[in-house]
Image (cartoon, rainbow, N blue to C red; front, side):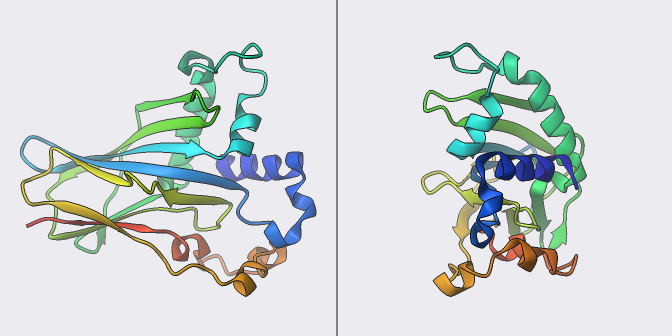
Length: 215
């Protein structure tokens, strides 16, 4: 089990979620803002994520890192941010970018940080460069998802996706999946996910997709 899901499981046990099988998955909720950055000559350079974690995980992550009443600063979070960035490489940064239907390979991350916001939620920033800058096709899709659905990534309602220095005429929108019915939600127990085949990719089916169109 990778670092990120180990933490999600530890959190679930710590706060008692393990005692509520019907709500076993997901364990952590993340609000996502993503940016697609472009080079001066119009090639895709990187996917930049800003993730805001839910209140429960944020409380868990900040515990003991600052004096009571103080916010946890980037310097205090530096070791955890570094560990998280390294762990993300093992899970493909939970990011799938398809350019004209073809998956794009990513390079190593060097720009990342974490901090506690004034509302006490943890903000994680990470820039994921493409292995090689790539010219955009007419149609691209960007998904942020944990295929095992330990972590539920949801795009921010107000600013889900931004295009930075994109060629003229490029636009972005978000397509959301059909919501689960109440009866379907009750089936999301630990045993349900344990019995899923490795290629089920349940989290992808639950994930919104950012759709980028370029002329």
